[in-house]
Amino acid sequence: GQQVQQSPSSLVLQEGENAELQCNFSSTATQLQWFYQSPGGSLVSLLSNPSGTKHTGRLTSTTVTKERRSSLHISSSQTTDSGTYLCAIDHYGNEKITFGAGTKLTIKP
Amino acid sequence: DAGVTQTPRHEVAEKGQTIILKCEPVSGHNDLFWYRQTKIQGLELLSYFRSKSLMEDGGAFKDRFKAEMLNSSFSTLKIQPTEPKDSAVYLCASSFTGRDTQYFGPGTRLLVL
Image (cartoon, rainbow over the protein chains, first blue to last red):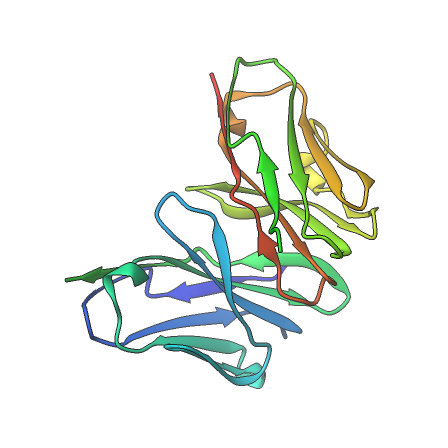
């Protein structure tokens, strides 16, 4: 089945630093989403990016489909960015969506 | 616009009970998903509806888990009978189509004693 690997599993940064999160997947993805989950909170979709580069606010996602990888870059991190970032993919013809284990991001003031 | 709503937000059940979780998707969305989230397993897909038709019945989950979508604006997830290992957060999500961004509800935190 599909596998999604996220790295690092946890990341601690000082406020203002940039964060780089990685997502690698085992099969070609036709849809890839990055989600944010606050401590104890529900999931929020950040970006849908099956290929190429997308920006929203301080977030940039770059997906290289052929290499089966995606990254999420958070610039000028803030303490409110702390939480878990999840990558999820699905594959055309297979309705199942597979999530990675997530990267726990901690931004210190 | 109202997002995905889920009730109850918290549920405590005794082993062997029947519990029903509820979800209202975003108005106009055609696809609805039920997920379970635990620290050990992470997020797992339980059920997937497309235009009220069940597309994914959860495989290993289907013996005690039953999701239904009675109309386009309401879905339930029944767990019968509950077991302590069912303790988790149950998330409902909807999207316009399965290929679009999914919007998640706040989840129901279930504790089975």
